[in-house]
Length: 161
Length: 161
Image (cartoon, rainbow over all chains, first blue to last red; front, side, top):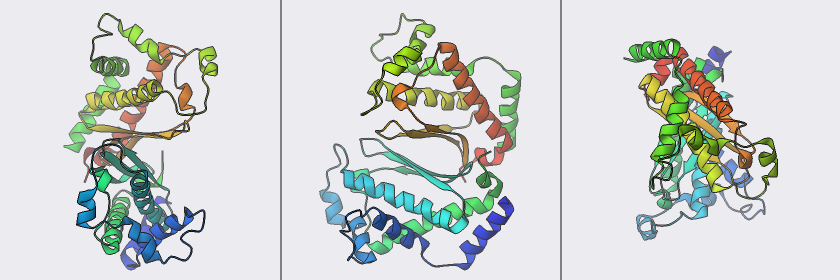
């Protein structure tokens, strides 16, 4: 079974350049839109929430608790990576985002017993991207990195035991 | 190198029944004792903080934010698992404890690309053990489970790449 899954993952990964990350992120964002505030917004407009210009970034103080909207965006950003991996492979990918109050943190995405992605977070207060393109390519490359890990260790990713 | 490490891990694990978890937990607890309040306390007395009788447990309300001392004890409990694994194997084990305000959470301990331990947490408000023996055997068995995982997947545990 794990071998089949790995082959499926590989096939999807190699053959299919469609931007799965962007689509996954938009789906998750819209799923949180309980009041329909974004119904008339385009995908691009929704993703604009992740964009910070250099000037905006510098203007954010890095003392005290990060803004709760920023914390939420970080959660959604990495959850979308994990969601995209699940959609590509059929395997259950789980993100854990642990943030300290000081603007530091760590993210780990696991599939079975495999750590497919691990990142230290800094400057959490200023989390953001120069453009929606920069946002989605960051996400796509994390998805690709995760799929590579699964290809390399299919047995470890295939089961929790 | 990874093969050597795995063999070392196995040798330690099989040959050595000394209670590494208990010792690791006490070390971590004492390391946090910045004001020397516990200097004259025995190890057993220090571990008593983790003991809750059934009656005490029932008396704790499970609404609202869990007590900060409980959150700290959960962190230390799992950090000690990870510390014991590092002492046994020489490999860098990292815990991530993510708790929601509602008393649920998740713990993952990773070594390299390997998830050596993963637990869902419930009833965080009432985290505690019937006795210090129950506490340390819970810890020891998590250490053993983690070492088993490393023995089974030494390559995955041996490197982050």
